[in-house]
Amino acid sequence: MPTLNKLSLALAASLLIPALAWAAKPEPEVVNAIRDQGFNHSQVMQTLYQLTDKIGPRLTNSPKMREATRWTQDQLMAWGLSNVHQEAFEFGRGWSYDHANVDLLSPRKTSLQTIPLAWTPGTNGTVEAEVVYLDAVTEAELQKFKGKLKGKVVMLNEPTESEEPRREISKRYSSAELAEMRNFDIKSTASQGQQPPVDSIEQRRKSNRFSEARDAFLKAEGVAGALFRSSWDGGLIRVMGQSHRVGKTFPVPGLMLPVEHYNMLGRMLDNGQTPKISFNVVARFHDEDVNAHNVMAEIPGQGDKPELVMLGAHLDSWHGATGGVDNGAGVAITMEAIRILKAVGFSPKRTIRLGLWAGEEQGLLGSAAYVEQHFATRPKPSDPKERELSRWLWSSPGWPISKLADHERFSLYFNVDNGSGKLRGITTQGNAAARSTFAEWFGQVSDLSDGTISNNSTGSTDHVSFDNVGLPGFQFIQDPLDYFTRLHHTHVDSADHVIPEDMKQAAVVLATLVYNASIADNKLPRKPMPIEPTAEEKADSKAKADKRSRNKERKALNDLK
Image (cartoon, rainbow, N blue to C red; front, side, top):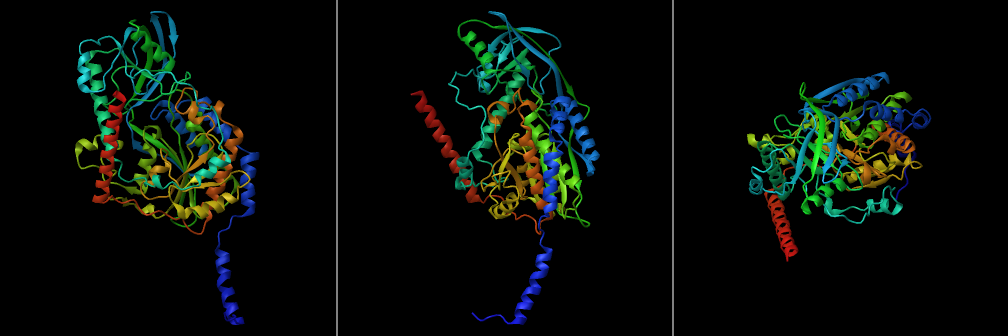
């Protein structure tokens, strides 16, 4: 190749100088200051204790959730954050309870453990009633019980058979497990926001129709109460809720029992005994405001309309415990990260915006409402009856997606909602082009985190609301600890299961990544926008759904044989 002359070299150098000058490299002083704030002046555990020990359970639209909303807003303002405010979205009824107890009266006397289901009524005093098992899974089968349930307490779940315990209580990811996460799973490449499986929608609708018919039947028959079985054994009560929508709430007091107590009642019935219990539930609805509220706060970027970097977590929890891990930990980590970034005093290129969401436990409702208000909308069903259903029962997510003005200003969203364990890496939701950027950013915290980057997708947290409309939204890979073995939605989800060192690590790693995202030369790369499946793709999906249904039927027949 010919050699460059002096003039060519000078010209090449002159072109490189401005490029280097404009390159947004992290400042070592800021990186060090983030660590100093996060490790030596941490407030992450104080924030967590305020949310859990002082405020307590934060069921959406309950008085305690409203208190948590006010407190987080006040705290963010006290830290000097800008544009701190609440944003409303329609949710439904509020609910809270003060007390619940169940006692077995016969064939022997003992106390049973219980937590009421959210959005079920109280009892107006102690009730005594016989227990029966409502063995019905269709509307026709309900009719067998007509005239037989007045004043009874009905068991609505099938008792389970005991199995050998196999779950290890707590774990951290091994190097081998993290290495496996780096492998791309081609079978799970379905994009968020695309058409849900046909059989999945129909099965959901079928279950929903039966639930509504069953609830109406219970009310008409004058049932005194309903018993539900926890989905985990070992004495753990996994709480849940019935519908929070106005006019759709459960008609009778509903009580969740641990597996061991529920199964005992079932065995008594099988052995020809009729259990009799007494129960009392002090609960109430709060109908003064059907709107729930997200909490927003910012560190402003530069210019008139700077681009956006977001981080967030859901503020709501279930009511059976104080929501220490799900998701008090995520709220405390994200609040601490933005506190750190404010305290170090740098000036971001992009606006850093925090979102604390309500209604996550009922279907990512707060983050979905926020995305719809600010970034993109999807058409609702044309059928008025379908519009009355919950979104997860709609036949389509809505096409086409209509971008709002801020869609183009958006760079990325980081979500924290996988427990309280260390951040070990991140999932890109199939955004392979973001991998190299994340590798660079995680490199600055390589002594704190493995920086595992998986191009696979993960669901069920608020990042999905962003990914559904073509915005880069990400969930972290976290050490599970005992999140999915004894804490997730259970009555022992408290701050006692949170490790302070893991919380500090997570806040520092998150703050470092947000800092890098806020000063980067360019927005993070995006995947192609979700588009409506073609007729051929829909037909293929239906064919696969039909095949799955046939296979299930064959399996059922083989099991009978």
